[in-house]
Image (cartoon, rainbow, N blue to C red; front, side):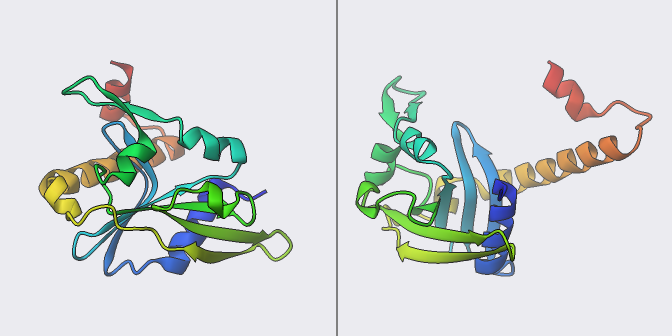
Length: 181
């Protein structure tokens, strides 16, 4: 069975220009998480949400978030469709034929995939392009310098995790200490 990490790897290597785009996977920002996030040179951003089951797809429409300033709750896709969202566009990446296209809101792009378990090849089919929900650059909505510092910290954390798994460290991993607190 295809693991989500393998699907992400296949998709980004087939559809990304790493010299022109920032490509992040499992990117967290506050209460929001993107399976795949693209930011192009102009700051245009596209989130891709991967759904491998019908129940996971349906649960995406039940996700609610809390506005920290007003205390108001809102549903994720209501927020996306009205343009009050971090990304300019949003798409679902789904197994071929899993969901009827009419069940997917019009603002969402649809990308289907077929994975051949015999040849281990995965093909992607863009079904519907996402609608741009706002014109603001990702960098207008986010501090670019803070973003870069967070990426550097994430790289350092991952390096320490990998190093700690491969060899015994003679010093305490500062990231492990933070997790305990």
